[in-house]
Image (cartoon, rainbow, N blue to C red):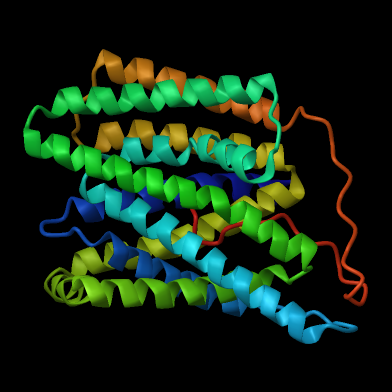
Length: 335
């Protein structure tokens, strides 16, 4: 039990450190390289995942070629979703403050419900729609509060573009669990191989993007001139992976509910510390918006873990008695 307490403490400590270092990096003079930051984090996570999580390939009875093709296709889609989620989310910090990013990333329920209704015809309960409405009101209120505090037309333009990047990141993030679930449950692909393969593919996508946009050269030059800033980026990548390992331990040894509750409180603490450690406008409108967001997250959490249980899907007959797939996780998306 003492180890669980250490994992909970580690989850708070590592993710708060990750968020603080990320915000500190964007407050370093001349730093606007969110995609470069994402590349560093993906490389670190890929290496550590290969060391600690790599697993043997599943043993197939038949249809090896078809299975491999399905896996490759899903890995590419998953890597692209992770790339956009991580890259756009990090890049947004050049235009918006950190609490707004946390608020957007906490509102994944909105695009998840939209995709569920449009793509799969999934039905949601009244509490889900209530949570979605509260989250939408909270996000709109928070964006309005920041816009009113900005005043300068350039700052308003930056805020609008930052919100666009965050919306893109959250929509991509909402696709990740669905793709992971297909790999882990339907195809019974080992979680360690999925983590490594998807992150390595994401590294390739991000590298190509920053080469084409010219960010790579500018970021390398900035890194050479700001060794302390480079240390921030490396340390935040390491703390991200350490926080994820603590989160998975909490989920494994306690429950998914415990993991959600702990990460929710962690996000609240992150927002509070962000306002205390880094100067930024705060008004009554911000307080009201955060209240709606907090209530929406609470309702969404309650609804998620109080709905009827669904019988797990039977494994594919093409696999030779594979072990049950672990809970899908994104190794680069901070909790």
